[in-house]
Length: 119
Image 1 (spheres, rainbow, N blue to C red):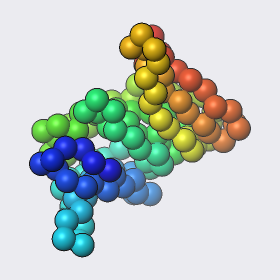
Image 2 (image 1 turned 60 degrees about the vertical axis):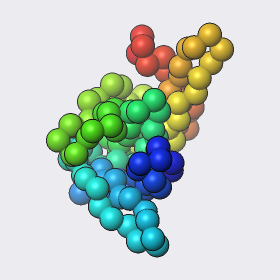
Image 3 (image 1 turned 90 degrees about the horizontal axis):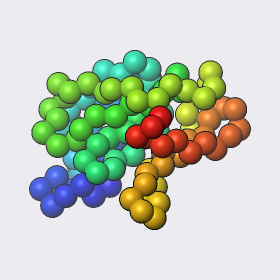
Image 4 (image 1 turned 180 degrees about the vertical axis):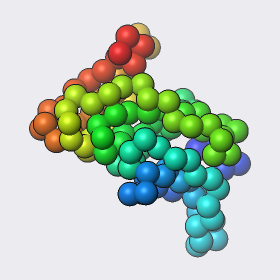
């Protein structure tokens, strides 16, 4: 995933140990940049407008800034689950007029669109 020219290619990784880690890919090798603890194991991730979105195994979605984050800024939960299971898909889309929607899919076999401003 390309973030900007100074960061290069990144791998965003969630672990069963409830950590979210960012690795930089350069010269055929991965180098760990930083990691943070989450409330549940991360299952789906996306980056949008400088923020990292994390869909977690408990069904909640959290966000945190990417820029200048060295692992000290923790994820902030912005939405709890629409089911008791896992979030399997997560994406942000821009609509005409500047509106945004968070799209999720989960164990309840539904795809839902959320307005992140009004939740």
